[in-house]
Length: 418
Ligand code: 5CA
Ligand code: ZN
Image (cartoon, rainbow, N blue to C red; front, side, top):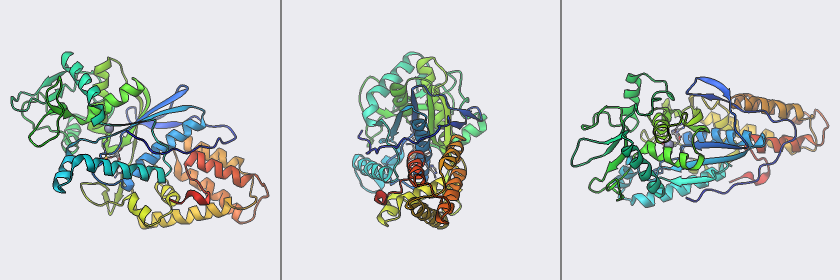
């Protein structure tokens, strides 16, 4: 699939800091330990509606991971998927008498524009589920022949399921107990009550064709892929086992990331799937998680249409810590817009206080599990001093501008407007 346009990232003088990141599997903030090429897979959108601020916040968090690795001199191999065939997409298309393929194309195109406007660095590999079906079929066939997957006991719809215990590591991502797993499985796309399964928590790998649903014929019989195996296979075939970071929102911890890992571990006999499982908190609106199913959404594209400064939006979404569930309010946006104005005025001055210490603090805070609230405050302090006329270092404004661009993805050139 086509990705979105990139932009050059300036190199910032001074010493980079190795990135430490919270890992859901171990419950600790641990250093990331990439080789020359750092590897990351972040779960992409299900394109049945436009990108809302919750999605945007999650992709911005992982954009900061990308940027801290670049600052540390790594190449970054970043992979993202698009779940371009799944129940919610088909249901929305049916509701609106729309063609599901065209709906997915339209929303994916809008997502690309939103990501580019927010200056999110693009993935190197951007793959849809549909275009990945041959590799998914191959993997599911292997799981079947290895005896870790089975056909549901149902002659009409012989869906293929994964024996959750097959990898020997089930539970190692989420660390949830079985009642918690069962609750989330039911809430997040699982089918615990489906007759013909051997265990309520076994996850679907291949859904046999139903009347009126799209399906692909082949060695598994006509059907379409399950959700978790899509991400397992796309990641595994691009990054191999034990890549650096598997990312997404915290709503993906279970069942999605637990099963993506378990499938890949069963396919390869290796563990772990990823060194870090990193999860962004949920953005809420009016006291509830922002979600397509609840309909309490603020869309990035709506704000673009309203000519909202995307660098202000970016700063607003980064003003809270990425792991904290947090509410989006008009105050958050207003404060961020005021902040970006102050910063713009400060870096437009001919001189300011020496900026090396500020850049070092910015790096320290970001390397500490992406502590953006502190990082932004460090920049505020420099900007306030610059605007008060303190300091006469003529290189400082450009250094701050480059550091904000490279490390936070905030471009303060006047051309940054959407
Ligand atoms: N296609 C799957 C992942 S393979 C999916 O979850 N798609 S999604 O469109 O529902 O979500 C896209 C990304 O945004 C996921 O990483 C999800 O965890 C994240 N996300 C969804 N809602 C929110 C929210 N309210 N706040 C923060 N992140 C969110
Ligand atoms: Zn995924």
